[in-house]
Image (cartoon, rainbow, N blue to C red; front, side, top):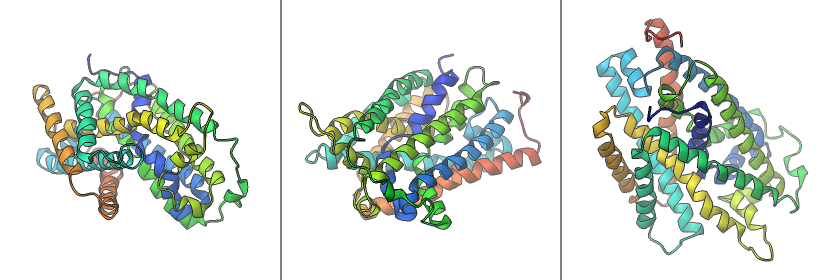
Length: 361
């Protein structure tokens, strides 16, 4: 029972896995293709995520007690399944490494410019390893608690509304063209990655017969609207030319807020936002460790090993060119692991008539 989670906890676990450092730079990334229609691109990305969640749900209903890397072996056999699991493992460990690098770079740029990156990496990963070793229920409780900081970001953004806003920056709607809007949705989709956590959380959900699809759909709706709100807010605050020069426009937005007793709200907020950023690292460390399908007694050692691998990845010289290239290839791998493989597994499960006896759930 120590690993069981409720649907309420599942809601926040999916959100915390998806929300993190990607939100801060998302308006900058999306405007490269979609310009002032970036908010529309995010809505389209939300629809794509919802379609994948339905595919996940149908696949998991056929194998309700198995996680992602166990389903691959059930459908494809042990040999092919293990080969595919290597790709899945590599994806999660590389995404975890990329998120950690971006987190360290952000902290170095905004908060601790004189602190060596390896020290920040060691501190963050130590906390992440400690939590990833814990039972899933403990991780879920921490994620629910950390979700209160999302409301803090929303409340802080409201304080920026008195600053000048120009609605003409986003008019006319759709002026970027359908092609560019869909290109922008690709960047939004990458920022929404993390919903694949359902493939690892599902077997541990209490009473998973009812309401799971509704829960994950509500989580996706919340995240989509949350991202759309912040993209729209930055678009009516800054012109597309300004956004092109801002790597973290949301932090720039918060920088414009000041009070008599409080200055640099952006730095105060970022100091707190470190927690939601690390939840993504915890999730991917957990996914990578679980995907190795080791026995429970060996699991802590696997988490420590993967935490050390993440630390080594952060030691690689990571200038902007390297991060761009790293992000590019990790994105391609994520498309395969998050979108292509689960879809093929679902199709094969029907064609080969593979399922568990409890398919009726």
